[in-house]
Amino acid sequence: MLNFAVHLIAAKMPDKNYDFKIEKTTHSRLKEIDFDALQFGRVFSDHMLLAEFEEGEWKSVKIQPYQELAFSPASCVFHYGQAIFEGLKAHKTASGEILIFRPDQNLERMNKSARRLCMAEVPEEIFIDGIKKLIDIDRNWVPDGDGKSLYIRPFLIADDDFLGVKPSAKYKFMVITSPTANYYSGAVKVKVERTYSRACEGGIGAAKAAANYAASLYPAQQAQKAGYHQLIWTDAKEHKFIEESGTMNLMLRIGDQLVTPSLDAQTILPGITRASIVALAKNWGYDIVERKVAVDEIVEALNNKTLKEAFGMGTAATIAPIELIGIDGVDYELSDFHNWDFANKVKNHLEGLKRGKVADEFNWIQKV
Image (cartoon, rainbow, N blue to C red; front, top):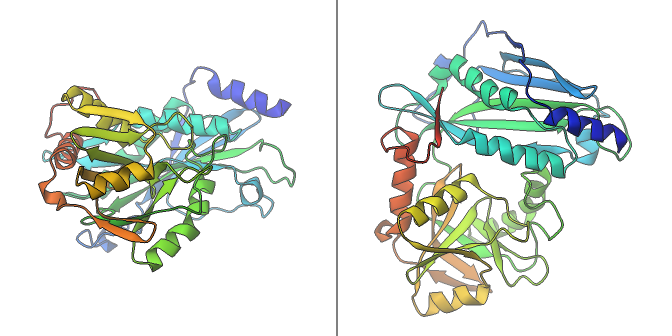
């Protein structure tokens, strides 16, 4: 563990001026892409960012053509799972400006994840300045049109070729981007999961670790076979309290109160979209609380018709309205989401903000 202490100290030192080496592609793939038929995460832009950490510091930082990379079969990431990632988007305004939504929060969350998984932290200059430089080079890849954006995927992986259970001494930080359309179209059907768990207290549920998503795939697959789009996860101890909705945070409107599960147990990923919606709701004067939410409370609210809105919150979808909730073999239908008050209001506000149509009173937007 002594070596890793050096890594953390190096990562927490003030940023130095990193020399970004830039190699541009000689063959752009832009003309090969049908921007009217985009799917989420299927097409990747011309360039990528790559930074390498070794001997206690970040050394090589470069933007290069998007390409495959070579790894040792003994690379730690394959054996011990030190892998974390982030997700954010760039949007184009009507005047052609490119805006990014709260990248500082993605950096903060990535470094919290890095600390939890004993990984080197990423300096602000490499993360935020690197993303801006990368998008500026590939600015023609940012699509126009409602529902379209450039999805940005920063990720950090262990890269030491050593078979032994300890923190890696080497890391690679990379950023790739993908022009994309909406993740979900319309409302979703979800099932409350009472057997499998996404995370437990004391685990890594609050980190955006690849392992969390790997653990979710099988239960989600079983739910999809049963006719649902995703799951609502419950606590690992008793399966009595709701946590996340698939890969998103969850919010309910019960009566006139907005309710979202508390982050106190460290089993829920602290979403940036979630935090933004909570801030907006408070600013608009809504009664909003963050607390434990029992499945039984949801059943009661569904039965007495006081559950007015239920939706997922996340970068990919912004807002994903829920039209049906399956609980213990019973499917409960919600009202038509087109008539919901808060979910539609906050979605339109955030979408407008990200495209420069709404005043940025919280200073959440950064320009490329």
